[in-house]
Image 1 (tube, one colour):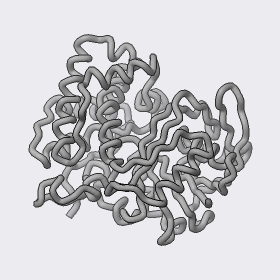
Image 2 (cartoon, rainbow, N blue to C red; image 1 turned 90 degrees about the horizontal axis):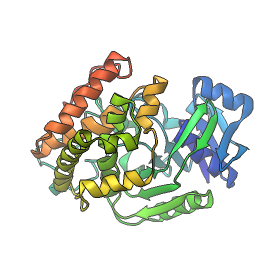
Image 3 (cartoon, rainbow, N blue to C red; image 1 turned 120 degrees about the horizontal axis):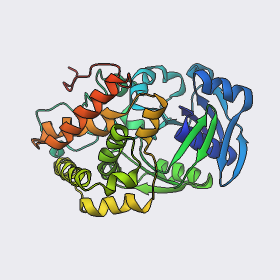
Length: 338
């Protein structure tokens, strides 16, 4: 299988490195210091106390890599808006596109049935694809959904440090089983991931979002690790109110939540004390993924008539903090493109 990974940071680097070591022909799109480090020293992966170099070819230009069987998108949401239109040289009609990214993807409402959203609303999501550029560049019929349940970091450009977890969930955006889902899960499993095919990937995406939507921005606002966030009684209650709103938003779009907020917090607590990905980005001065994790929930809530005052408060506070620190550089509108 010929695979290209767009974005060789923490998650993308881990996926690329493991797939390459398992025998797949893997290349990657990277820029700046990451590209320079990989071209100089190769992609370095650290897992369970060992370090090895993965045979991954990297370029800044997708035209250098050519058509692929699978293109994995491992970018931050704001970066994908700019990069998606440049990926055409890697795509032919048979290429599968797998966004291994946080939050709600641009295709989320497009893949839902007409009965799962207001009939008079467009299916685009202004919060994650404000100009429709991603949807125009990446055909929905070629996209697969993916949920990443693992922790890793990039302590320096071109170096990937695995933390905990190996789980990747893959499924068709419109639901059901497919041969390509089975094939991709088999390749990921061979590379050492716990790869699970899903027949309802939208529900899996919403469930992960339901847990991350509060802990990630609160960690970026406060600098606190997850255990300290969960242990604060006032923050704890605020999170439960916001999670209740998100659960109410999910129900009318076909993503009901069966657990209680307390049960979901228990899952996070079992992982111990750690810095969320958004806190890591804030500390490193990288743009924050506020839109795909928080703004999109408020946007969908407005469409389905569910009030989200706690989510909106969290969105406003986090966005203001990020703008003041230069981590959320542009004004964003929730008005869908015409």
